[in-house]
Image (cartoon, rainbow, N blue to C red; front, side):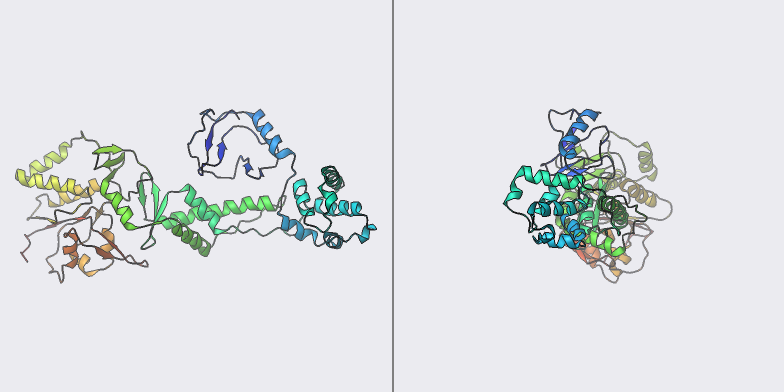
Length: 457
């Protein structure tokens, strides 16, 4: 074709991207399709060797391909069963279909032409007319003769003076699995198997916040596109006045389909969080100590909102440590804790408490760390709320830091959650409203501040 070509996502087909105009109305025959609008496919980038790397204009190649695959076949607008359904309104057809030639003085050839003529009022496709005739009671050994068969079908098509026009358009139904497969093919998603939470990949990270609303809008838009395309295909020449809106039940069915074919275990996802720290400019591999590019294959569910630069120096932060007048040992603890908070590891099994009266920099350090890590990695739950509110624990999933300034001096009634968060070997049970509960291994380091040193337990 003289233009860019690539393998399809399945690896068994090919896409050719070329500039030009489709010379006729036909768009599909078997597994050969030709479109210039209102269709979607996944661009794989798997270039086919021997074809250009650029999308080029080649109208001559388009014309040759169209003539080879589409010109010899008339437009097919309906399925076999739809054609038969229309034909069965004709009493003569009903008799001919069962092999009754009595209306034609038992002349088989006249009866053959009459049956083909009725079929031709509803389809101009020679292959389809032949296929349907072979299902009738008139089909016999003579029909196998190519010259007789071609001559009869051609005569039937030549005798057509009007083409059937449907009095009532066919009802269009878009199966939910068609839209679901489209989403799964074009979007990178996965679903947590334990609670059904869907994550969507964008800008180098998978997130779950607002995903159902985002996919709901996409599902409704795809429904409209498929509905309009199918209307044009099954009801040619009939204007489409209105596309019905996909109802909530339909959207829920598509989402359920996506969940059914994208679920993974939480353990699989957690394992990928342990190895990589996600920055805006890539994934830092803790095993190789190198930065690699973002990829949807690594299912990272949180991202630090800064660019990784191993040579970066911040004079403002250095000035902060100097102004705090902290001992060098304490400064090293804070710096180490900051780096520790980038990881999923909690093996130190300790929480960090900053205490002291007045403006001594406690809140500045907490806000600095929260700003660097970003909202993906930080939660802000008090110890009291974590112990008392079962829904608050779920907010710690996937977080690297839980920071809460100015703890109240209210005594804790229990410390089970605190012990688990600093225990390194226990699982937390969490639950989000209207979802199933799930268990996870804590990754959040605890950072608090208070005016007074905590009393020993």
